[in-house]
Length: 441
Image 1 (cartoon, rainbow, N blue to C red):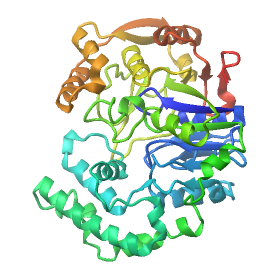
Image 2: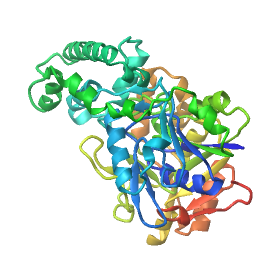
Image 3: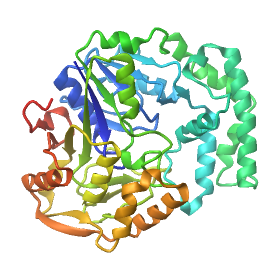
């Protein structure tokens, strides 16, 4: 019995949806567990028949008949978006999707007030935006870390009176926090529409009505379903969100997430719910670097523009998708941050045939101090981390050039990781994924 943990070794968008879907099919997994992040995920899956979906909260194995999704206590759930996504999946042919998902009662819930506060703060940063997705995940996690008693969890959704009390408290508290922090009239542009959220006296009741189906459909777990489901399958896939380089601790402040992007939560869940399962950590990386939104990307280049077919597109909150050559320094940093992986999967190899030359950054020759600082980065203070981030944004990569051939690039990445590449993806669906190392899966 095996629990496979999918970890993004970059800034997100490595191909976790594709790899999760492939692993579910390959290992006949019965369950996909979301072990971090929240509704900001955008995990793309294309079935062999050509049906596409960008999975946000449902597990990326949901196209496979009978596969269940468990939203763990480490997830930050947007209930309205969850229902919307489920309805879309029903239209795409998965008529039983709601009978295949459970939400841990301890999972945090995003409210309209959290989403609006998130957006107001990001808009107020003007040109200094951090790259938020504008969904409210960070705002919700921040409240929980601060110990606010009005934080809403999935188990609260069945108690309308408690829910209404908490919503009223959140509304009042968030209004005061925003005014105290920003110190100006938030009813003026560009924050007008988001500030209006706090002025609507009937919003809490309307929001509660809009998500009532969460309870009517019995989506909140009351019986430790994950432990029960684990008894009925030989394989579970733990699907990560975002990437190690965006991690709350190891990510580059302030352009990082509020969530734990390491495999730690997944490992704890295995020990708690499926202790007999063998744990396999799979690190996923593109054969180049990608970042959606602002923040450090030392190997950024325009040479890759136009040759990558991207499902996730530019949006008002993150901005554009940016590309860079493969960065061995950050790749090795990510591996160290997660205490290594058992297998490496490399995606988007199909674009190699679109160029004659491929580049890989081995180090930053003029920044020995930077590379030294990276070794201790997670333990630094926030001020020290911000200094390292500035150094990283100014870093000048030293490149080695290769023939743009799969065998050459995979060998180079193997040298960087010190281990063989086990899985190679050359397209958008599971049939384009190959196991390169015998007995790897």
